Length: 264
Image 1 (cartoon, rainbow, N blue to C red):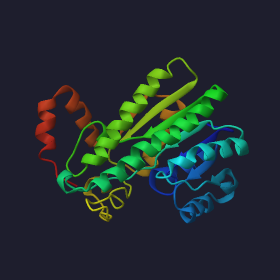
Image 2 (cartoon, helix red, strand yellow):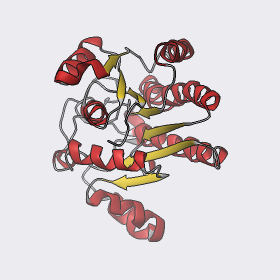
Image 3 (cartoon, one colour):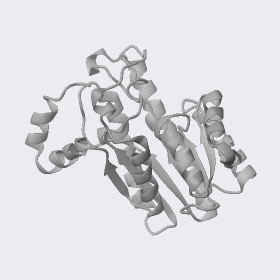
C-alpha cells in the first residue's frame, strides 16, 4: 500500500476524477475525507466504497464559501489529528466566447477554480507547517498551459493556479511539505456537461475530445503515482498534451494549430 494510515482530504470528490480518487486512496490504505457541495452525492460515493465505507468520511464543502474553511480545517484536525494530503480537484469549466461571457460567470469560475482552491490550500498549509510535513496536490489542466477557444476564463483560472502553486513549490523547497501539479489533458469525464455558458447556464453537452480521452481510472493511476513519488508536475491525457510542447518550442506552429481547432 502506498498511503497506509494517511489522512487524505479530497475537495471535489462527488464525481469524475475526484470520486475515483476516493476509491483509489482507500485501496492504498488511506482514510479519506470526501468533500463537495452535494451531500447526497457524497453519500453515494461512500456507499460505493462497500466494505471500506468506514474509511470514507463526508465533509460537505462549497468552494464559494471560503470564509468557512478555517473552521472546517480546525474541526478536521480535531477529529483526525492531522491532514497528511490535500488533493484539490474541485472546479468548473466554460464553453463560451470571451465576449459573450458575462462578468458574473467569469467571477464564479475564478472563485471556484482559483480563489476557493487557494483559500482551502492556505488553511491546510498552516496546519501542515505545524505538523512539519504534508502534501498538497492540485488538479489543473493543460488549459493552464495554453489558451483555447471557448475557455478564456477557465484557462485564466488554471494559468493562475500554475503561477500560485509553482511559487508555493519554490517557497517550500527544502521542507517536508510537497506540492504536486497534476495537469490532465483529455480525460473521459463529464466536465464539459457541467461547464458554464456565457450567461451562467449549463452547457450540458459532451465534448468529442473528452469522449475520446483517457479513462478516469488511468488518469487516477497516474495522479496517485505522482503524489506518491512527490513529483513537482505531471502532464498526461492524450495527444492534446503535445500542444504544451508546441507552445514552448514552436510557438508559431502552436498558434497556427490552436486557431484551427474545433471549438469543443
